[in-house]
Amino acid sequence: MKHLYFTPGPTELYFTVHEHLKNALKEDILSLSHRSDKFKVIYADTVASLRELLGLPEDWHIIFASSATEIWERAVQNLVEKNSFHFVSGAFSGKFAACAKRMGKNVVIEEAPFGQVPNPREAIIPLDSEFISFTHNETSSGACQPLEDFAWVRKNNPNALIAVDGISSLPVITLDYEQIDTAYFTVQKCFGLPAGLSVWLVNNRCLAKAEMLEKKGIVTGSYYSLAQRVELSQQNQTPETPNVLAIYLLGKVAKDMLMKGIDQIQRETNYKAAVMYHLLENTPGISPFIQNPEHRSKTTIVASCEKSTQIIEALKSKKLILGAGFGKYKEHHLRIANFPTHSKEQFEMLADKLSEQLDSDQ
Image (cartoon, rainbow, N blue to C red; front, side):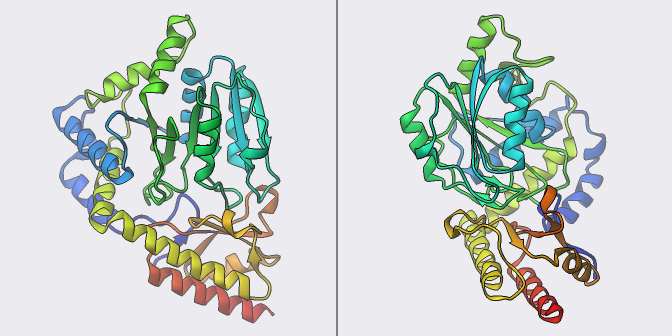
């Protein structure tokens, strides 16, 4: 039996990836020029499948980048002249705010204690905020921001651009694109692919803001701007040599998910999350870290457990790989990925093995 990864990214490969890799080798995808007609077809197919899977409106644009960290920087360059506002619910949302500060922007933060999410209705958002950032699913803590919060902030801040970090939740969640302006994700989490590719979704309000900044003489990119990226994307091209294999695999997996059906994927995610949270709530020695059930992530389940290191090692000996806690919680938390790549049967087996290990430790 090979190792089975329940780590929150990189994670277990989506079950069809092995076959797609074989086909990529047969088709010489790894040697393909990104200026070739064949690559343009791959690019167009991937974008079309993603657009359908995500329910993305036709007037939104899909841009490929190397990582979410790159997207943070590009978003600040292209969408913020002076002032940005960041809801922070953990390490990664905090890193985005820090990125904006390093780039010289006036940054206002509404931060919740680790394990909670900010309440937008209690936040004082400056009227001059140009950009408001949410993290839907904070991978470090397992805290999940309610989707309805995006609409509330949009209604009360109509001139600001609303951004959503969907790194460990897309495509499992359904976003209302009328309520936001940009979102982004990486492929090594819910898509079950190797790291090295991220996807940036932007609407025309973002594009107009970037073009306005350029007209003011503000540099919106060191070697490409958002406007240039969008223009090239419409030609099924990128400004730099991209990760051709990753784009190819993303398109294939997106198509596989479409065949399965996003409704089915969401139902299975809900079921698996219910199985694990039931165990955490009813087993001595372990408990959900997120106290408010309404704010518990369904895709990144975080458990409080003082014997987490021993449990991780014990399950590793059974070929089951769990994630450790983040930062100072490394030895006090378990982080368990519940992504589309993890079947119901695999999750039930994990729950059984985890329960057995906890019982043996008592």
